Length: 202
Image 1 (cartoon, rainbow, N blue to C red):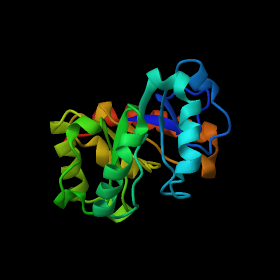
Image 2 (image 1 turned 45 degrees about the vertical axis):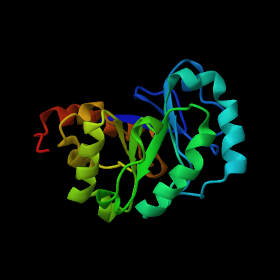
Image 3 (image 1 turned 60 degrees about the vertical axis):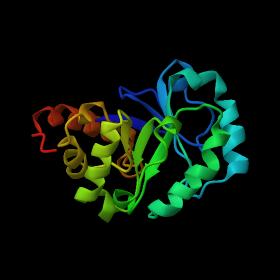
């Protein structure tokens, strides 16, 4: 899996994960780096009056955008499906991520033409169950990109690295808040090396 560093930065990682709360436009993005955007539902709650003007400010960098996370309801797949139906038309052609939440294993995805990435959100308990892996496999069958949220430590990285095709996944985490940027980046790059030897079980 390839890490998207939160808030940008000039680091030897795959790309950046930004939000309206990111200070300015990171140099990594200005220099043509890949990036994606979260909607802040998990941390602050989605605020359309803040989010869409900010997204307009990122228009010049649309070409290198991997995905924009459509509004979701943390821990509730059914409500998230409803939010996707409400909001997806407002993103004006940006590549959208549908965020998988608890219970998505028992529900259909939105129509495939409206999204390009499965963003695995949900509670910690749900994210680490076989149900989430089943949802990922369904998305892979639709040839969707897969992004895993909140991957900080080797145990969780290894769990998803066991999925066939996971070398092409992206992921993010907030580990730098606890250990600082340099230690975090060093650890994540080491995870990527170690993942080559993880047995693929799914």
